[in-house]
Image (cartoon, rainbow, N blue to C red; front, top):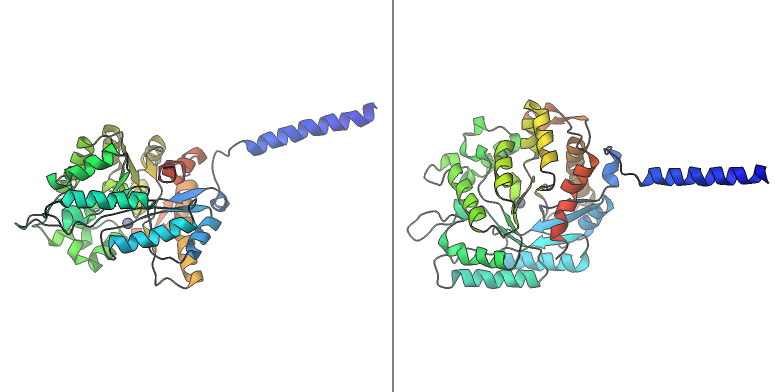
Length: 360
Ligand SMILES: [Zn+2]
């Protein structure tokens, strides 16, 4: 009897110990964990009804939040695409609606916007996105730039606040936008503003300054403490994590996405690795992963698009989750060491903080 019961007892203890081990969350993730860990890209412009790339995203455990933008195709056309994707992939896809501001200065300006917002929300939007055209393009009849804190928008923001509708705001631009091309700190900023001189504010000294843009946005945060507010692109404070921390401390309703600005974190971590790492750990409930990537109707070659997506997502994972060294082209080929954020921090930045866009 003794001989046969001992191994059974021993095996069951071993089994319990092993299953306990398996349930324990890892302290850090590896490169390969990229394919296993649930993730969300909260700033990805999915502008095509071709759902194959959403399926690909799903296969590497990504959900997508697609913010519509008051630029290019009309908000209505973008909404139609988003509705179709939401219908097909309700668990994997969320979108933010948007509205045109072209009718600024006409009677009923705010009411028209509010009715568009209602349409968006009824169509399944998880919130509303506003864009840099407010502050950088839109002008009043006297030719003055209209900023985000313009009184004409007040009823709109009050409405969002009252109805608990999340807002993602891309206001202003990276500070590089106000510098000459040769002084810009990142290759992608240099490229973007070379290709878009209309948005390169260094060339438009008559337009509002960087500080004007930031101040207008901060005024909104001050006035509407009840709006769940995502500052897109590190709230246009990408160049200095200290400036980001100041706003996060001052405005509890604020969170940020890091889309299209991860290079700025890398630039800063090259100079002070611990400071950037500690910042992301301290504010891990308030920062979300995003890329500003896109899929457009012209993206039809499956392998080409999925390779591009995987390469981009993986390189960010290496930087944020591991301590491997990567070569960053946008930093002139500099070698950047990964931050190896704790797994619990990665889970929040990469997924949990994005939950608000999926639970309505
Ligand atoms: Zn974007």
